Amino acid sequence: MAETGRAIVIGAGIGGLAAAAALHQKGWAVTVLERTPALRPVGAALSLAPNALRALDVLGIGDEIRGLAAWQGDGGLRTPGGRWLSRSDAEAAAARFGGPLVLLPRTTLVDRLAALLPPGTVRTGTPAALADPGDRDRPARVGADGDELEAELVVGADGVNSRVRATLFPAHPGAVYAGFTTWRVLIPVPGAEFAPHETWGRGRIWGTQPLADGRVYAYGAAMVPAGQRAPDDEKAELLRRYGDWHHPVPAVLAAIRPEDVLRHDVHHLARPLPAYHAGRTALLGDAAHAMPPTLGQGGNLAIEDAVVLAHHGADLAAYTADRLPRTTAIARRAVRVARLNMAGSRAVVAVRNTVVTALSQAGPAFLLRGFDGVADWRPPYASGRQHAGKP
Image (cartoon, rainbow, N blue to C red):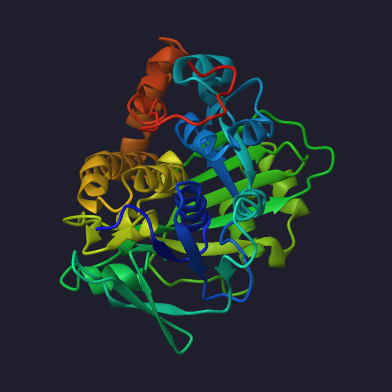
């Protein structure tokens, strides 16, 4: 197969845009096809761990994104009554994994990735379908808005309900409900001062995180049957579920308007795919390895996928060999964490909280070990721009 040529990326989310930028950097002629009429990312904010930031170094924007880090002190894990189960140390985490954790609006990253592409690369309002994945002797074919396009490489970056994945692996059962729904908001909260935290209750969690632009990113998750919606509005639902939790949760809820709340049921790939490619077509991000958000790694791994795919280029078997073991292991870990932090049994919650408290007394390094092998990942090739903390 050709080492470069024409590449078509289906989906203009974070993973798709990162892949397009990485492939463009490697000399591919890239077209991105996005079905929505504009680049409107789903979700309010995104956390980027050092592994994703090192992948963004490859694209030349890692330092710029690091500059948006807002978390400089301690945060941690709490109970709904406000008791600290564990405290986290931003400096210890940065020292262990080689950089900070950056929380930023998804729109900021989408805009920055799109700016790396030549004008006209992204075609919005263009639904696309994989017509033929191609093989060594023929290009892949994509149907888009009445046209049929050929390419030496097609990238399916079309999310958890990927149509490209269904075409490549029709026998795979696809995404299944993870057992819980999520709410997310990104709002100003005047006068709110707090340490960033995640709070674990019985069958529900809450997180409140400050952003560098002064806004607050807050999220909740609860074990509920799939497809449910509030009988009135989702702000009212949040008040019912979290209104009596510790400060600053009531202040955040008071600042929310009903239209600020995004609610989505969580789906994941409970059965791993046999490969992340077929023919000349590759999958990345949620299309390849959708997982619960409990490790905050979904978007991070999509960015990793993007630079690794561009590194291997047309050698998609090497891409699968590189990415499938890592992402499958992290997805399984995310499922285990979801079972822990979304536990609904009073007895299990009591044991969980006792164990977390005991482990935290051993110091932040003990708890940070849970991200060993995740946040310390490095890309297979270096960027031309190295940030100061990177060896």
